[in-house]
Image 1 (cartoon, rainbow, N blue to C red):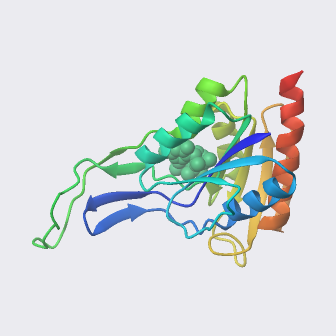
Image 2 (spheres, rainbow, N blue to C red; image 1 turned 180 degrees about the horizontal axis):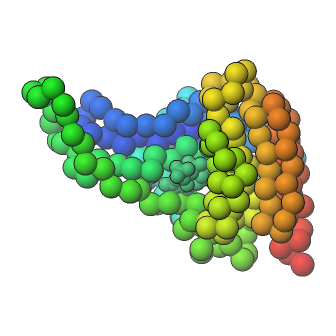
Amino acid sequence: MKVLLTGGPTREYLDPVRYITNRSSGKMAKALIGVLLKRKHKVTAVLGPCGVKCPKSVKTVNVETARQMKNSVMKEAEHADAVIMCAAVADYTPVKVSAVKIKKSDDILRVRMKRTPDILFCLGRKYGKKKVIAGFAAETDKIEENALRKLRDKKCDMIVANKVGEKGAGFDSSMMNAALFFREGGKNHFGKISKNRLGYIIVREIERLRQTKNK
Ligand code: CTP
């Protein structure tokens, strides 16, 4: 398969020296890239700033903002059989980006923010019938309810729910407290699992989903 994968966070600039971002180490994306290559898939990675170094065989596109990520993903997705949205995309971006450094003045600084494009939603709407689309859901609570809502609203085939705030798993860790939910029905709770092992399970599921879409 040709697989497009995103990873890392996005940065939404306030001025030339400050940005708003999400927590994301890129470790899950790195694990997925490793498994995809081992299983002989052709990989394109659109990465936010996370320091993940891809092997030469991976077409790598480095981006910063959610808008840039959307433009690259929608372009690269045309050639893909499957897309994995692993990136922690910022949901809001400042309405105005100051061209010069904002100087401190009042005690309180108010920043007006506007929604960023929902890339997974756009992918689901455009390619949901033809390509395998997998998303992630970072949740602190109501894991299943939120994951199922994202699965339905964003029209994807699979959601990997990531329970954040657990000791010994999650951000910066090699482990994740994870569960998979499928559009066709069915779920699989893993509890704490290594990101490498989870990457293998996700890729095997995507291979299976590709077979059923091809029929
Ligand atoms: N996502 C996206 N574009 C965005 C925000 C999120 O493509 N602007 C994708 C993520 O890459 C992930 C999925 O949507 O695959 C769910 O992301 P998450 O942050 O868990 O949820 P949100 O949709 O942002 O919803 P909320 O923050 O309200 O939980």
